[in-house]
Amino acid sequence: QVQLVQSGGEVKEPGASVRVSCKASGYTFTNYGFSWVRQAPGQGLQWMGWISPSNGNTNYAQNFQGRFTMTTDTSTSTAYMELRSLRSDDTAIYFCARLNGNTWWDNFDSWGQGTLVTVSS
Amino acid sequence: DIVVTQSPEFLVVSLGERATINCKSSQSVLYNSDNKNYLAWFQQKPGQPPKLLIYWASTRESGVPDRFSGSGSGTDFTLTISSLQAEDVAVYYCQQYYSTPLTFGGGTKVEI
Image 1 (spheres, helix red, strand yellow):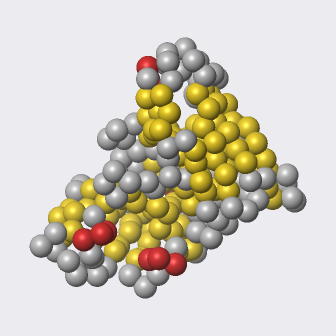
Image 2 (cartoon, rainbow over the protein chains, first blue to last red; image 1 turned 180 degrees about the horizontal axis):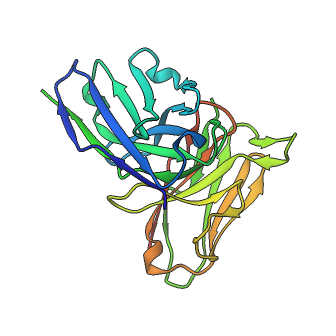
């Protein structure tokens, strides 16, 4: 069965960077795209971007362009996100989500458990 | 950007009664070439990630109970829970995947 297991929670100071991983299993990694979605405490869901593990193509939300990078490692079936220049309003749970295909216009069908990133001095 | 608006924000329903959640997009999410509505519904319980319920506006995900159904086309959509069960207490989100940035509605909290 499809499993997405994310790395553990992080506490970072303002201005720092954070990297979160999402290890996939139970399917052929390169056949499905990933998105990263975040959820601030008590708030709704915000899409950050999409990446295709098969060719590395990406599509970033304008809000995050310039300080957000998504990558994948096909040798370990792992997706990564890095967010730089962290601010207090980046405090959120970050989810990886698999798409039901290799394009950004496929629906999300599986989610990681989420990683809490806390930005505080 | 496509703005997705859900209503109501909170919904209190008795056990066994029908729950109806509305979702409206600021522009059509119906793609004419395949006649599909690029809209999905998710359920999120506290401390859990969202769970896919419905995609293409009306296709139920495998394993989702048939009391959940989706309807609508173009800009107006509905998620219906035909007979609310205790385990359905959650926040429900709709999401469009017609264009980037992909966007979610603000959520509807369903309580008993």
